Image 1: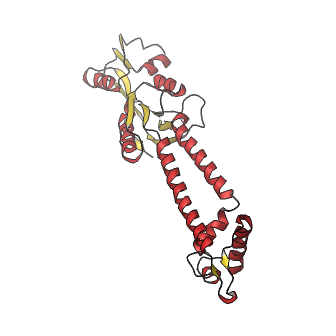
Image 2: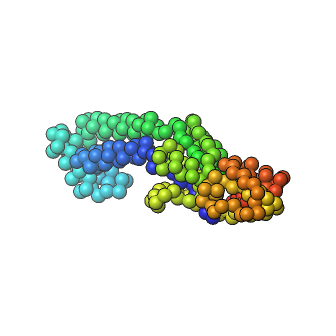
Image 3: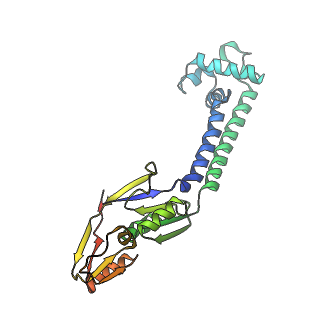
Length: 255
């Protein structure tokens, strides 16, 4: 039996919205007609002239010249001081333009960082089969330590309940033994394999989880009594201390 961590797309909605917005903003900026020329200018301005810049920033002198000329045409300002043909240098306007661009680029990056932080989720709901509760606890601790999550609801359900709640969007992450319904495209990760261990110490008692009982045939005739519990602890305790016929999951063999 495989065990999965399965994440509802709802949990990723805020992340996805942020990612799309970020991509749109960055794409729009990158596609702006002046973005690349301004980027080159902001790097080249730290050198005395185009010739010395070309030797340091990985572009040829003609390439830099064309980009600077493009800025001059579109912005209608002079960026190269050609009063001395042998040693043309940057104009004060060029230096000011580069400073403005660098300053606004930093502001944009800071704003995008704040936008990301503001849109990250702070609360989520995790549901787990009881046999996977320790795995769910480990994930919750990791989320507290490494993400923006500050509040986590972690509940234990049987398989039917956990799948119903997941499919209706009531929980964000589920620890389960299968992918629910026909939603094969859900993001998931296999965390390991687990074998069911059968116990048959007293034929008078049939021990079932609600899922096992609802999906199984009628109890064997030898079983006079039937115990149905959604608690793995209760079922395991009964089988060990009182006896009966039932099964409980064994240790998880991690992937």
